[in-house]
Each structure stands twice: as structure tokens, then as C-alpha cells.
Image 1 (tube, rainbow, N blue to C red):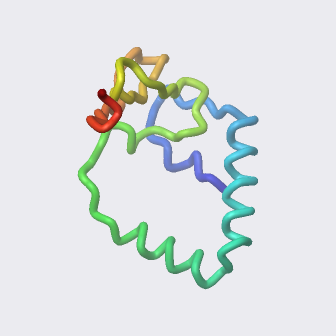
Image 2 (cartoon, rainbow, N blue to C red):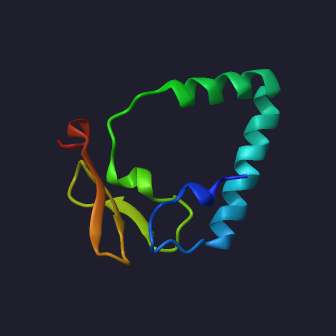
Length: 96
């Protein structure tokens, strides 16, 4: 199951349709690669030491999380409950 218990945001409200869809996709993916590969991927993910990000405190299945594109190359994820940007990245290859 996608774990909303890891969400540290006080505004977290699960979007149940999105949560069910995410769980179904995860289950289908897990079945397609096999249990051994799944466990290897989980171990690898646990070892990653990424830079902390504000998005780490949120859950992608929250009713308040939105993501989208702005100008060419701009991508954002934001929280509508706090009206704050959680993640911003720019893809230069999308600019002509």
C-alpha cells in the first residue's frame, strides 16, 4: 500500500481515488517485475541519500497537491492548502 502514514504535512487529506489508482499501479508493477526485483528496488530506494526537499513531507495522493507546467521548460509541484511551491525544476531542452 502507498503509505500516507509517512506524510508529515498537517494539511494532508487523502484523495481516495488517486490512492486506489496508485495502489493498483504499484501492485501491477510489483507483479510484473517479480518479488525478488521488487525487494531489490525497495532496498536500493532505502539506501538513496537524496538532498532533502519540501516535497518529502507530503504524499502524492493528497487532495491539496498539484503539479503542472508553466512557461516552456518550467515544471512545478505545489500545495493549494498552504499556497506554496514544493518543488520547481526547469528542463532547458524544452525551450526552443
